[in-house]
Image 1 (cartoon, rainbow, N blue to C red):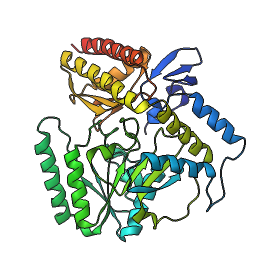
Image 2: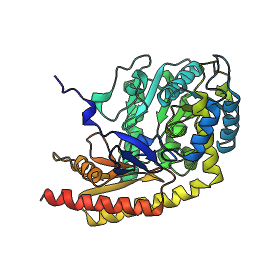
Image 3: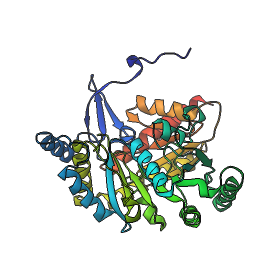
Image 4: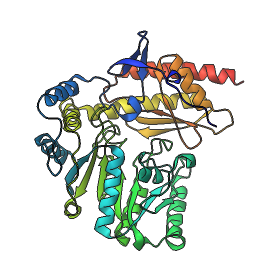
Length: 401
């Protein structure tokens, strides 16, 4: 029997402010996971707090088959940030539901049932989206309603072009041996794999997939629940020069409140059906986040701060041979270690926590450490975190000698 988990196994926090969370004894932790990606602007951001408080006094939600004016206002803001071909938006209760609704819309529009995803992708925690996730086999659920096909993803820093060509050949083989492309409703992929190891999808791979989708009438869905804004763009996939049929936005957009957003083209908009509305409070929080990003011109800062963070990690890679790769885009980064029996990544994460820095472990073999600070992080806070990480490297690697 597996051991039961109790509350005593977890660190209990009582307050959050910007980058930091505090426990009951007043100890401070710098959270470089942004609460698992949920806090784009950090904890207790004043603009978000004020907007939610004001909305809570007048309207929390609306009846089925209706919409709050606040959501219409949010749609207008999204329309100004989205690529021109994405003109319809709908909000749902969670990120997982947003992915599910996008898949259901693809199935309805194509009259096909199957969904194709890629190794390393992480798409949610419902039965359907867990079946679509391919990070760890032990965490996958039964495929449920849709038949899910998993294709290889180009996970290679060296010989990247050869790896990509291999993946595309395997995809064509999948069409011949497992499922004809005419049976596939949608192809779902992330611009930056988070839990899958921090890999950045090459633009050439994106374009090749787009061409395959157009050839066979498959709808291309890009899941940007972690990369949107944090990757330095509202729609990171647009930087690859592609035009996906749908883009899913979510994690962190409402700064901790549950919300999923799907952007679709006019052609697909006709297939939208009325649904139970998302929380108006979450929509207002997301609107406040978006306005703050725009008014404070945070996206250029994200790109500069992301370079500072990733370059600092690459400097450590040059000094510590156990680091085999540094990946990422913007403020979504990762540090990879060679797979080994001794889980260096887990030991490093624990050593950092003891020093006041909260990081997380990613990858199918727990060999990657993820870095996801909020968009409001400062240069000094990044430098402090890099210093703590180096201290942990020295301690853990020294103990392993």
